[in-house]
Image: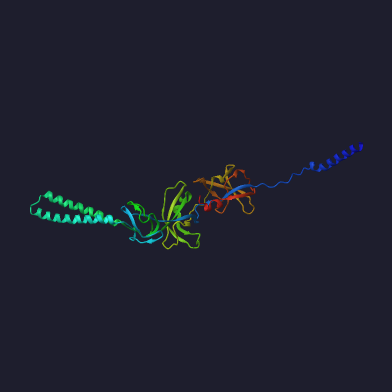
Length: 358
Protein backbone atom coordinates (compact mmCIF):
# COMPACT_ATOMS: atom_id res chain seq x y z
CA UNK A 1 0.00 0.00 0.00
CA UNK A 2 2.82 2.35 0.90
CA UNK A 3 4.68 1.40 -2.32
CA UNK A 4 1.64 2.28 -4.42
CA UNK A 5 1.45 5.81 -2.95
CA UNK A 6 5.15 6.43 -3.69
CA UNK A 7 4.70 5.33 -7.37
CA UNK A 8 1.80 7.67 -7.88
CA UNK A 9 3.79 10.64 -6.55
CA UNK A 10 6.70 9.88 -8.88
CA UNK A 11 4.30 9.71 -11.85
CA UNK A 12 2.81 13.12 -11.03
CA UNK A 13 6.27 14.70 -10.69
CA UNK A 14 7.31 13.23 -14.06
CA UNK A 15 4.26 14.69 -15.84
CA UNK A 16 4.85 18.09 -14.28
CA UNK A 17 8.49 18.12 -15.42
CA UNK A 18 7.44 17.09 -18.95
CA UNK A 19 4.89 19.90 -19.25
CA UNK A 20 7.07 22.59 -17.70
CA UNK A 21 9.00 23.73 -20.84
CA UNK A 22 5.80 24.32 -22.80
CA UNK A 23 4.09 26.22 -20.07
CA UNK A 24 7.03 28.51 -19.34
CA UNK A 25 7.95 29.40 -23.00
CA UNK A 26 7.72 33.11 -23.86
CA UNK A 27 8.17 32.73 -27.71
CA UNK A 28 5.00 33.73 -29.70
CA UNK A 29 3.30 31.03 -31.72
CA UNK A 30 3.98 31.32 -35.45
CA UNK A 31 1.12 32.80 -37.57
CA UNK A 32 0.36 33.30 -41.29
CA UNK A 33 0.48 36.82 -42.82
CA UNK A 34 -2.99 38.27 -43.58
CA UNK A 35 -3.37 40.32 -46.80
CA UNK A 36 -6.21 42.71 -47.51
CA UNK A 37 -8.22 42.02 -50.65
CA UNK A 38 -8.41 45.05 -52.96
CA UNK A 39 -10.06 46.10 -56.20
CA UNK A 40 -7.90 47.97 -58.72
CA UNK A 41 -8.59 50.37 -61.57
CA UNK A 42 -6.63 52.44 -64.07
CA UNK A 43 -6.74 56.25 -64.17
CA UNK A 44 -8.35 57.62 -67.33
CA UNK A 45 -6.02 60.05 -69.02
CA UNK A 46 -7.45 63.38 -70.21
CA UNK A 47 -5.86 65.25 -73.06
CA UNK A 48 -3.81 62.46 -74.63
CA UNK A 49 -4.17 61.48 -78.28
CA UNK A 50 -4.83 57.79 -77.69
CA UNK A 51 -7.68 55.97 -79.44
CA UNK A 52 -10.92 55.13 -77.68
CA UNK A 53 -11.99 51.51 -78.13
CA UNK A 54 -15.74 50.88 -78.00
CA UNK A 55 -18.08 48.06 -79.07
CA UNK A 56 -20.57 48.68 -81.86
CA UNK A 57 -23.38 46.99 -83.76
CA UNK A 58 -23.92 46.94 -87.52
CA UNK A 59 -27.45 47.89 -88.59
CA UNK A 60 -29.25 48.74 -91.82
CA UNK A 61 -29.64 52.45 -92.47
CA UNK A 62 -33.21 52.16 -93.77
CA UNK A 63 -35.82 49.42 -93.34
CA UNK A 64 -38.91 49.86 -95.53
CA UNK A 65 -42.32 48.28 -94.90
CA UNK A 66 -43.90 47.45 -98.28
CA UNK A 67 -47.66 46.89 -98.68
CA UNK A 68 -50.52 47.29 -101.16
CA UNK A 69 -52.30 50.65 -101.42
CA UNK A 70 -55.64 48.89 -101.77
CA UNK A 71 -57.35 45.92 -100.12
CA UNK A 72 -57.79 42.51 -101.72
CA UNK A 73 -56.82 38.85 -101.87
CA UNK A 74 -53.24 37.96 -102.72
CA UNK A 75 -53.05 36.06 -105.99
CA UNK A 76 -49.28 35.77 -106.47
CA UNK A 77 -46.13 36.18 -104.34
CA UNK A 78 -43.13 36.61 -106.60
CA UNK A 79 -40.19 37.04 -104.17
CA UNK A 80 -39.03 35.43 -100.94
CA UNK A 81 -36.88 36.34 -97.94
CA UNK A 82 -33.26 36.96 -98.86
CA UNK A 83 -34.01 37.89 -102.49
CA UNK A 84 -32.36 41.01 -103.86
CA UNK A 85 -34.79 43.22 -105.76
CA UNK A 86 -34.41 46.39 -107.80
CA UNK A 87 -36.61 49.48 -107.70
CA UNK A 88 -39.80 48.92 -109.72
CA UNK A 89 -39.58 45.12 -109.63
CA UNK A 90 -42.93 43.33 -109.22
CA UNK A 91 -43.19 41.68 -105.78
CA UNK A 92 -46.80 40.48 -105.47
CA UNK A 93 -50.21 40.73 -107.19
CA UNK A 94 -53.76 40.93 -105.83
CA UNK A 95 -56.83 39.38 -107.48
CA UNK A 96 -57.78 42.02 -110.10
CA UNK A 97 -61.12 40.60 -111.37
CA UNK A 98 -63.43 42.90 -109.42
CA UNK A 99 -61.27 45.98 -110.00
CA UNK A 100 -61.07 45.26 -113.74
CA UNK A 101 -64.87 44.88 -113.96
CA UNK A 102 -65.36 48.22 -112.20
CA UNK A 103 -62.94 49.95 -114.56
CA UNK A 104 -64.63 48.43 -117.62
CA UNK A 105 -68.08 49.52 -116.49
CA UNK A 106 -66.95 53.10 -115.79
CA UNK A 107 -65.17 53.36 -119.13
CA UNK A 108 -68.41 52.46 -120.90
CA UNK A 109 -70.34 55.06 -118.89
CA UNK A 110 -67.73 57.72 -119.61
CA UNK A 111 -67.79 57.03 -123.37
CA UNK A 112 -71.60 57.11 -123.43
CA UNK A 113 -71.74 60.32 -121.41
CA UNK A 114 -69.14 62.00 -123.63
CA UNK A 115 -71.26 61.29 -126.71
CA UNK A 116 -74.30 62.67 -124.91
CA UNK A 117 -72.43 65.81 -123.85
CA UNK A 118 -71.20 66.35 -127.41
CA UNK A 119 -74.77 66.13 -128.70
CA UNK A 120 -76.02 68.54 -126.00
CA UNK A 121 -73.23 70.96 -126.84
CA UNK A 122 -74.55 71.25 -130.36
CA UNK A 123 -78.03 71.94 -129.02
CA UNK A 124 -76.65 74.47 -126.54
CA UNK A 125 -74.67 76.24 -129.26
CA UNK A 126 -77.84 76.39 -131.39
CA UNK A 127 -79.69 78.00 -128.45
CA UNK A 128 -81.97 74.94 -128.19
CA UNK A 129 -80.79 74.00 -124.63
CA UNK A 130 -80.53 76.06 -121.49
CA UNK A 131 -77.21 76.80 -119.85
CA UNK A 132 -78.14 74.97 -116.63
CA UNK A 133 -79.03 71.74 -118.43
CA UNK A 134 -75.83 71.76 -120.46
CA UNK A 135 -73.63 72.56 -117.44
CA UNK A 136 -75.25 69.73 -115.46
CA UNK A 137 -74.37 67.28 -118.29
CA UNK A 138 -70.75 68.50 -118.31
CA UNK A 139 -70.56 68.10 -114.50
CA UNK A 140 -71.84 64.51 -114.72
CA UNK A 141 -69.13 63.68 -117.25
CA UNK A 142 -66.42 65.16 -115.00
CA UNK A 143 -67.60 63.07 -112.02
CA UNK A 144 -67.58 59.88 -114.07
CA UNK A 145 -64.06 60.64 -115.33
CA UNK A 146 -62.84 61.08 -111.73
CA UNK A 147 -64.43 57.78 -110.70
CA UNK A 148 -62.78 56.07 -113.66
CA UNK A 149 -59.37 57.49 -112.74
CA UNK A 150 -59.80 56.35 -109.12
CA UNK A 151 -60.69 52.81 -110.13
CA UNK A 152 -57.86 52.66 -112.65
CA UNK A 153 -55.50 53.63 -109.81
CA UNK A 154 -56.90 50.85 -107.61
CA UNK A 155 -56.35 48.41 -110.44
CA UNK A 156 -52.72 49.53 -110.69
CA UNK A 157 -52.35 49.26 -106.92
CA UNK A 158 -53.05 45.53 -107.23
CA UNK A 159 -49.49 45.20 -108.51
CA UNK A 160 -47.02 45.66 -105.64
CA UNK A 161 -43.62 46.93 -106.80
CA UNK A 162 -40.38 47.54 -104.92
CA UNK A 163 -40.08 51.24 -104.00
CA UNK A 164 -36.27 50.99 -103.73
CA UNK A 165 -33.55 48.46 -104.50
CA UNK A 166 -32.58 46.20 -101.63
CA UNK A 167 -32.98 42.82 -99.95
CA UNK A 168 -36.23 41.24 -98.74
CA UNK A 169 -35.79 40.84 -94.98
CA UNK A 170 -39.18 39.30 -94.18
CA UNK A 171 -42.29 38.02 -95.98
CA UNK A 172 -45.36 38.60 -93.80
CA UNK A 173 -48.19 37.05 -95.89
CA UNK A 174 -48.81 34.21 -98.32
CA UNK A 175 -50.91 33.55 -101.41
CA UNK A 176 -54.73 33.60 -100.98
CA UNK A 177 -54.58 35.69 -97.80
CA UNK A 178 -56.72 38.83 -97.51
CA UNK A 179 -54.91 42.09 -96.77
CA UNK A 180 -56.05 45.64 -96.11
CA UNK A 181 -54.62 48.76 -97.66
CA UNK A 182 -51.30 49.56 -96.00
CA UNK A 183 -50.82 46.11 -94.43
CA UNK A 184 -47.13 45.15 -94.42
CA UNK A 185 -46.51 42.36 -96.89
CA UNK A 186 -42.71 42.58 -97.13
CA UNK A 187 -39.95 44.24 -95.13
CA UNK A 188 -37.22 45.57 -97.39
CA UNK A 189 -33.69 46.60 -96.38
CA UNK A 190 -32.71 49.14 -99.00
CA UNK A 191 -29.32 49.48 -100.65
CA UNK A 192 -28.72 52.83 -98.97
CA UNK A 193 -25.95 51.15 -96.99
CA UNK A 194 -25.22 49.95 -93.47
CA UNK A 195 -24.40 51.91 -90.36
CA UNK A 196 -22.59 51.20 -87.09
CA UNK A 197 -24.25 52.13 -83.80
CA UNK A 198 -21.92 53.08 -80.92
CA UNK A 199 -23.03 54.23 -77.46
CA UNK A 200 -20.69 56.80 -75.90
CA UNK A 201 -20.33 57.21 -72.11
CA UNK A 202 -20.62 60.71 -70.72
CA UNK A 203 -16.87 61.26 -70.29
CA UNK A 204 -16.23 60.38 -73.95
CA UNK A 205 -19.13 62.48 -75.22
CA UNK A 206 -17.58 65.51 -73.48
CA UNK A 207 -14.43 64.85 -75.53
CA UNK A 208 -16.26 64.72 -78.89
CA UNK A 209 -14.63 67.85 -80.32
CA UNK A 210 -11.30 66.01 -80.40
CA UNK A 211 -12.56 63.05 -82.47
CA UNK A 212 -10.67 62.91 -85.77
CA UNK A 213 -11.12 59.39 -87.18
CA UNK A 214 -13.28 56.29 -86.88
CA UNK A 215 -12.04 52.80 -87.72
CA UNK A 216 -13.79 49.46 -87.30
CA UNK A 217 -12.75 45.82 -87.31
CA UNK A 218 -14.47 42.54 -86.54
CA UNK A 219 -13.35 39.50 -84.58
CA UNK A 220 -13.57 37.45 -87.79
CA UNK A 221 -10.91 39.56 -89.51
CA UNK A 222 -9.15 41.88 -87.03
CA UNK A 223 -6.48 42.77 -89.59
CA UNK A 224 -9.03 44.22 -92.03
CA UNK A 225 -9.62 47.84 -90.95
CA UNK A 226 -12.78 49.60 -92.13
CA UNK A 227 -12.85 53.39 -92.40
CA UNK A 228 -16.10 54.78 -91.01
CA UNK A 229 -17.67 58.24 -91.27
CA UNK A 230 -19.81 59.83 -88.57
CA UNK A 231 -23.42 60.44 -89.59
CA UNK A 232 -24.76 61.84 -86.33
CA UNK A 233 -24.23 62.01 -82.57
CA UNK A 234 -27.39 62.33 -80.49
CA UNK A 235 -27.03 65.26 -78.06
CA UNK A 236 -29.33 63.61 -75.51
CA UNK A 237 -28.32 60.75 -73.20
CA UNK A 238 -30.54 57.71 -72.70
CA UNK A 239 -31.52 56.20 -69.34
CA UNK A 240 -28.05 54.63 -69.05
CA UNK A 241 -26.31 57.99 -69.59
CA UNK A 242 -25.08 56.91 -73.03
CA UNK A 243 -25.04 59.02 -76.21
CA UNK A 244 -25.81 57.25 -79.50
CA UNK A 245 -23.41 57.78 -82.41
CA UNK A 246 -24.09 56.56 -85.96
CA UNK A 247 -21.27 55.80 -88.38
CA UNK A 248 -21.64 55.16 -92.13
CA UNK A 249 -20.16 51.95 -93.52
CA UNK A 250 -18.54 52.02 -96.99
CA UNK A 251 -20.23 49.90 -99.67
CA UNK A 252 -17.05 47.84 -100.13
CA UNK A 253 -17.04 46.59 -96.52
CA UNK A 254 -17.94 42.92 -96.04
CA UNK A 255 -20.37 43.42 -93.16
CA UNK A 256 -23.91 42.27 -92.52
CA UNK A 257 -26.69 43.69 -90.38
CA UNK A 258 -26.56 42.44 -86.78
CA UNK A 259 -22.78 41.87 -86.76
CA UNK A 260 -20.69 42.99 -83.77
CA UNK A 261 -17.82 45.35 -84.55
CA UNK A 262 -15.06 47.08 -82.57
CA UNK A 263 -14.67 50.79 -83.20
CA UNK A 264 -11.48 52.79 -82.61
CA UNK A 265 -12.07 56.54 -82.27
CA UNK A 266 -8.97 58.65 -82.90
CA UNK A 267 -8.53 61.81 -80.86
CA UNK A 268 -6.42 64.93 -81.21
CA UNK A 269 -3.91 65.50 -78.42
CA UNK A 270 -4.69 68.29 -75.97
CA UNK A 271 -2.80 70.13 -73.25
CA UNK A 272 -4.80 68.58 -70.41
CA UNK A 273 -2.49 66.51 -68.16
CA UNK A 274 -5.09 65.44 -65.61
CA UNK A 275 -6.56 61.99 -65.08
CA UNK A 276 -10.00 60.84 -63.97
CA UNK A 277 -10.20 58.49 -60.97
CA UNK A 278 -13.11 57.20 -58.84
CA UNK A 279 -14.00 59.32 -55.84
CA UNK A 280 -13.83 56.15 -53.72
CA UNK A 281 -10.11 55.79 -54.52
CA UNK A 282 -9.11 58.95 -52.62
CA UNK A 283 -8.37 59.38 -48.93
CA UNK A 284 -7.06 62.26 -46.84
CA UNK A 285 -4.42 62.70 -44.18
CA UNK A 286 -3.17 65.94 -42.70
CA UNK A 287 -5.29 67.98 -45.08
CA UNK A 288 -3.74 66.33 -48.15
CA UNK A 289 -5.34 63.88 -50.61
CA UNK A 290 -3.80 60.54 -51.55
CA UNK A 291 -4.45 57.35 -53.48
CA UNK A 292 -2.88 53.92 -53.13
CA UNK A 293 -0.74 52.96 -56.13
CA UNK A 294 -0.14 49.24 -56.59
CA UNK A 295 3.31 47.82 -57.40
CA UNK A 296 3.41 44.72 -59.59
CA UNK A 297 6.96 43.94 -58.47
CA UNK A 298 6.20 43.13 -54.82
CA UNK A 299 2.37 43.33 -54.61
CA UNK A 300 2.57 46.31 -52.23
CA UNK A 301 0.79 49.65 -52.19
CA UNK A 302 2.24 53.12 -51.76
CA UNK A 303 0.56 56.43 -50.97
CA UNK A 304 0.65 58.90 -53.89
CA UNK A 305 -0.49 62.47 -53.38
CA UNK A 306 -3.02 63.85 -55.88
CA UNK A 307 -4.62 67.26 -56.35
CA UNK A 308 -8.37 67.23 -57.13
CA UNK A 309 -9.41 69.68 -59.85
CA UNK A 310 -13.11 69.06 -60.43
CA UNK A 311 -15.86 66.50 -59.98
CA UNK A 312 -17.11 64.70 -63.09
CA UNK A 313 -19.92 62.32 -63.93
CA UNK A 314 -20.64 58.90 -62.40
CA UNK A 315 -18.50 59.41 -59.30
CA UNK A 316 -15.31 60.32 -61.18
CA UNK A 317 -12.92 63.10 -60.10
CA UNK A 318 -10.38 64.93 -62.26
CA UNK A 319 -7.02 65.11 -60.49
CA UNK A 320 -3.46 66.16 -61.25
CA UNK A 321 -0.26 64.70 -59.87
CA UNK A 322 2.06 61.82 -60.70
CA UNK A 323 -0.54 59.30 -61.92
CA UNK A 324 -0.53 57.98 -65.49
CA UNK A 325 -2.88 55.77 -67.45
CA UNK A 326 -0.53 52.81 -66.88
CA UNK A 327 -0.79 53.02 -63.08
CA UNK A 328 -3.07 50.75 -61.11
CA UNK A 329 -4.71 52.19 -58.04
CA UNK A 330 -6.97 50.83 -55.32
CA UNK A 331 -10.53 51.92 -56.03
CA UNK A 332 -12.37 50.84 -52.85
CA UNK A 333 -11.70 50.17 -49.16
CA UNK A 334 -8.81 52.64 -49.05
CA UNK A 335 -9.24 53.65 -45.41
CA UNK A 336 -8.21 50.25 -44.02
CA UNK A 337 -4.80 50.06 -45.70
CA UNK A 338 -1.30 51.15 -44.64
CA UNK A 339 1.69 52.34 -46.65
CA UNK A 340 3.90 49.50 -47.88
CA UNK A 341 1.31 46.82 -47.14
CA UNK A 342 1.15 43.74 -49.33
CA UNK A 343 -2.32 43.22 -50.79
CA UNK A 344 -4.22 40.55 -52.67
CA UNK A 345 -5.97 41.50 -55.93
CA UNK A 346 -9.37 39.88 -56.25
CA UNK A 347 -10.61 41.87 -59.23
CA UNK A 348 -9.39 44.50 -61.66
CA UNK A 349 -11.30 47.08 -63.62
CA UNK A 350 -10.17 45.49 -66.86
CA UNK A 351 -11.75 42.18 -65.89
CA UNK A 352 -15.22 43.54 -65.30
CA UNK A 353 -15.32 46.61 -67.52
CA UNK A 354 -13.28 46.13 -70.71
CA UNK A 355 -11.78 49.35 -72.09
CA UNK A 356 -13.45 51.39 -69.32
CA UNK A 357 -16.70 51.59 -71.28
CA UNK A 358 -18.77 52.31 -68.18
